[in-house]
Image (cartoon, rainbow, N blue to C red; front, side, top):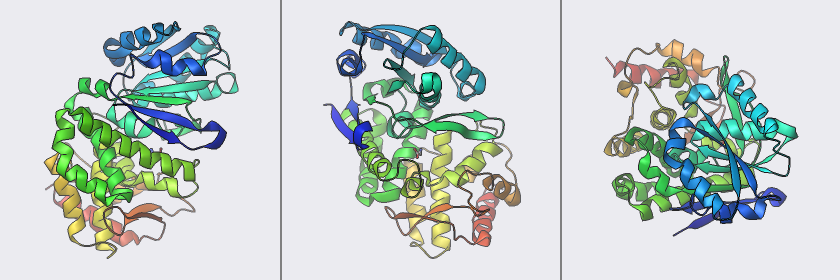
Length: 371
Ligand code: GLY
């Protein structure tokens, strides 16, 4: 039942294994990477309670011992103080360049630990063991690592590819429903970017995936990883095509900033709303059929997901306020916002040529629907 996708990066190519029971098999899968039978695991409190013992026993089966650092759970951990703690701990534990660091957790742990591994001793290899859907389909693959600062999210970091990714789909059974749905926003994104047939399959099978069916979950994670791997292999450092993976993110990042990166809006929820708005904008610009945004929203609603600004609780800034937040986006080039738009479901493209009045009109309409 295990599927494997390779991220084709020449000498730095690596496998992403997808399927249930990978925590228990971690020892056998990680052993070929090791020069000595010892790894350093960094995780968070929530994930440690659920999965750390399974990982340690999996490692023990291959006679690999582990030292563990457990950090607090939550976005605040992706910060300078926890980076310092993680790096100093790796050095204290005498983890060498030829050793392997294991990131066990969701996107926060993967990004932080990947960055710690990138900078400690100028680069230690690391293995991603993602336990959230968002991390399995997106953040654990492709080597983007980093932390947040007072100036914004993910503004400090490095490209540091993992040596292996173990996406144990059985770990998704322990995810709270809201987190699962938020991660599903990223799955939908792949269909919207470049695979209309996958989106169609999600429309048919989304409820089966949500209900916990392993076969459907493996298929959804595998196809998402496959698409990400293809894009990363073409454009590792986001000089071009990789920006496609940011469909919905220009809107999403503004909404996350507007809601204070709080529980009011999870990242994947912002991505889902952002994808719907990107299709709305594409339709307004005459790029895609008028029905396409409705079809995107209908699927999000079928999955009980947030699909519009009206679904975000509490106050939001007005249109100009949201535009100002969008202008902070990392994708701004020469003062121009880069958007990912679509000529239809499965046909996204990157452009800097977007009429600001069209963006205003989309936001005006979406904000009006909240009243
Ligand atoms: N999450 C977007 C990327 O990895 O490029």
